[in-house]
Length: 440
Image (cartoon, rainbow, N blue to C red; front, side, top):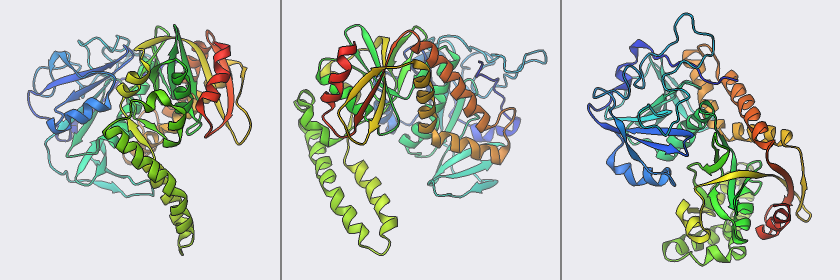
């Protein structure tokens, strides 16, 4: 199934796409499977960007400049019109560089983040906050997500070499999670790879993929396996390369404090500022039931309790850099995909594992990934409402992505051992790991 379409940019989009002249652009290549370009990014965000793309590095591109400087490629800079000719088949892979390994620094990146010094634009139409905390605006045929005076453009889904224009101090985490990373993940399909909603570890020469619904315990099972001798690969999102290897995808790693008594090897590395953050998170975790009880007694308790739970839950987590887990357990840049775990959260009971067919798990993995990208697809639907859907609506594009990822996963899982692991959440993760190891 083809998921690529040619990129077209309206002729009147020029002012909304201005960037500083002659600024060099840089790229982040992710295991030869997908790539991100950075152009004109503020120096003040350099450290935050470097952390956000771990374990990968931001490197200079050999293709010179973007914008009004030297083009990324002749006639194929982001924003160039690369529509297919009249004889092109519908859905044909007609975009320049499509199918070329994204690690090749002579081709444009899959997604280019371009920062602009421009001030606040005059909007033609604004969509207010509908309860999701997002405000969207249209200028001409371009659509932007707003954050105060800052904005970032919302690209059309499935556009090869997509471009996201950023102005002002747009929050980096929202920029990446809501818009950029989903677009980069979808691009992996164009290169024969995949980004799965799963964690991954390496045991010996075998890569183990851990998938499951949000909050099912993927990170905790990975930590349990790490404590028992595995090496760290990735958390939450994992690249499945065209060669069949597992590799990291940039993702924020968060640790729940209740797991720490079960993780002595990691706990030994928690010193200084890390230990202070851990103690603060443990305090927030202990205070959460008290706060919830107090909120229920207030007149608007039913409204306040979910908000307290969300805020307290976020506070009761410890963010960790990729290299923290590598330092504690060792790491593997890539690992051949050999075993998959479908993690099923149960209310009670002892952990148990059994071998299952991979077809059902492929569907579950693809559907959980689509759910996790919900903010991206919500913005894509807003874009459809404001400027139309072109040849494919956001709903159609999401469906096509799910089908393509399901097919790719079915093929990958056909060569792997697939386990269903059933376990309650909140128990010693090493107990869950213990039922996996005999199958390896």
